[in-house]
Length: 260
Length: 352
Image 1 (cartoon, chains in turn purple, orange):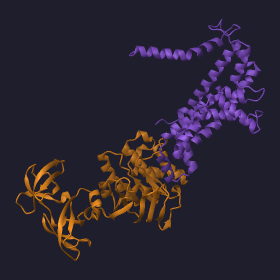
Image 2 (image 1 turned 180 degrees about the vertical axis):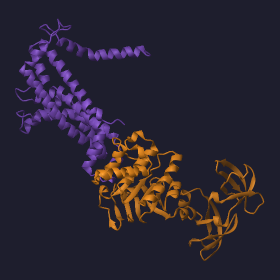
Image 3 (image 1 turned 90 degrees about the horizontal axis):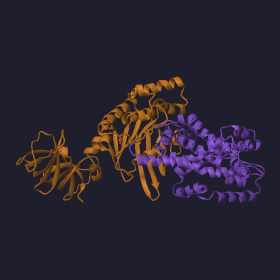
Image 4 (image 1 turned 90 degrees about the vertical axis):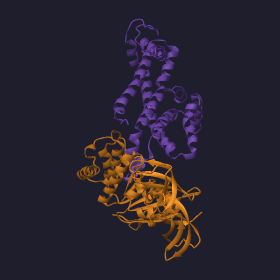
């Protein structure tokens, strides 16, 4: 190794970042009754408990559904916003950027409370899931916007002109030229959106309907009264799920992205 | 095949007139160059012909029908861009197929046309390559093929050789010119490189400040520039002063350091006027001191292989730039005579 100090430093940073996750994963295979590390004997019993826990299963289904829906919506809106921002915004560019990124800049709890007021003011309240979806879209939108605008910055407007001169209308140019060329940014943004939505707590906590629960909320709820390794099993599964989404998307969609 | 007619075409950006009422008629199959420095309005003109830039005023007609309100995608033009603008996610064949798909050309015909055009640009074996696997010159030819395969009414080229190295640029000039002749397509070529415009075009349109300064055959532009700006833009030029002694029937007698010369006059010479005359460096020649001509001393000599450039300070105080073949064995400091053939003088106008 050429630079031992740097190498050791990097390893320490990784250890600092990853050790808690490893501890959780390790603790989830605990055979004992309490969330401890190192585990007291290996067992999958807490996974079995989890899969038989209807409350958790319902929460995970809600989370997945919510993440999927808000990812689709926020990918569409975020991509359109990014196209406007990069190609047409002109003098308003800076203003639009700040507006689009504001959900990131403002404390999440503030966004959540404002939205809560808003949904009650307009009368839909939290009886429906609309407020919750809007909240998730809002919080995931900046990630799509950032990723797509980054890949749009390297989109050469003469490609669009060339396609026009060859006879392609607006929609064809978007579908055949722009979309394939900004695909890495769109997919990256969508992945971010999915993961963020799956993970978000405050917004969900404020805007969820009564009796409804997402996985992070259910986990929080569970830990207030229980301290079993089941919590670690839930965490481990959600880590696996998140990683799974990333890997599968890379395999299915990512590999087809033409690198240039 | 298409004739293009441009009438009082104008483009206003804010308070500046990028293109200021130009009129131009391009014959069917003609190769025309818009030549001028950057910001002269040549690219804006091209973009208006293509339909990428809305027209502020004036008309553009293809075979008599006004296309000003026809969107670019419906104008049926082939366009080649300075940076080629090949679609990076498509192979060469897919790039070429794109325009044919838009025209709903049947598959077998499409394949046949792509193969034929690729052959024409000498890229027969490259159909399955991606643009980033090609050299600059090859990408250029693919861009040309993509524009031609749709058999457009007009071919527009926007500084297509600007990103190539010098040697390739010269090859491509000839290549594009020959190809254009074979296809016989009406072509508008935008460039700031006068040599490019000269070699390729049937007619050159020199533009300054959004207006046409002069248009005509390359030889006319070069040998008979109407203004000082045109003379200087299309090549190196010596400017000397002379006194008009008489004007008669389109010819002016002008007394210069080379003696009295007869120069064709376009109605600008007046007796006793001090006139500016243009002399191309390659029209001049050197001879031993004492010979008839303008006496002077060589102040600098630049050897460039096929030619030698001399700077000669005349005893009258003017400095001339003389370009000769390398067999002239003069060196710095030599006293020489600069000789000019009688038809080398061209009257530009009254001296400033």
